[in-house]
Length: 201
Ligand SMILES: NC(=O)c1ccc[n+]([C@@H]2O[C@H](COP(=O)([O-])OP(=O)(O)OC[C@H]3O[C@@H](n4cnc5c(N)ncnc54)[C@H](O)[C@@H]3O)[C@@H](O)[C@H]2O)c1
Ligand SMILES: O=C(O)C[C@H](O)C(=O)O
Image (tube, rainbow, N blue to C red; front, side, top):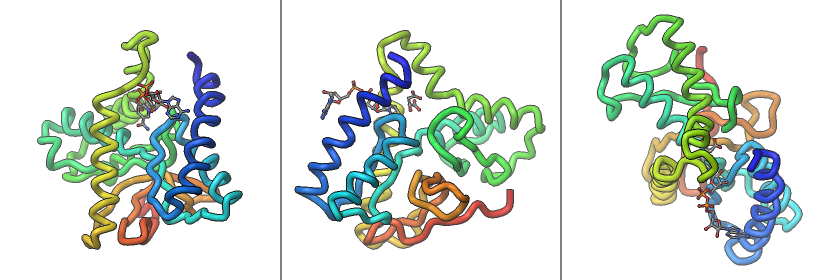
């Protein structure tokens, strides 16, 4: 199935599910993981707007898998334990829209520019690499579940009032001229407490 087919099918599924969310749980935090996330999140927003339930603080595109990939590849190259690593990933969740900010990675590893280019491409192509390896049998599954669990857990911590819960997510944004953009987001009791900027690049 091509990504265009995926869009056509998933746009309809997302529309149906979001209509049900608007009707039965209009104040829920919605974690949109269905692809293409760059499109399914704006579709969800339109469905909620039409239903009169849209709250930009409660709609999230799940881009955590890009962060998981970015930090795994960075940790391998830098020979640091991945548990200690963080790499913000901004932009979107498809190919070159996935922008890992290795310049802001912690701990700092001073990797060569060539290495950063390779790590960037590997992070951007991570999903495609899995799709191709599975040869028609779908896309990432366990790593998607892992990433989804991390993001859902962060949302629950925010709902419980835990301070300073920060994750990257594809949300309504004024960080760039794009209406939706992935960047670091601080989560709290109402969902998005603050969409954080890009810091120095
Ligand atoms: N954002 C990410 O990081 C990421 C990573 C991997 C996969 N994905 C995406 O996640 C989505 C699911 O992938 P998967 O591997 O779990 O697919 P899957 O085919 O294993 O599961 C899809 C599920 O959706 C159900 N479904 C189908 N039509 C439905 C409808 N109208 N209403 C409710 N449920 C319906 C199916 O019964 C099935 O259980 C895909 O869009 C995939 O591209 C996203
Ligand atoms: O890239 C894909 O097609 C699937 C998924 O979004 C992923 O990142 O693994």
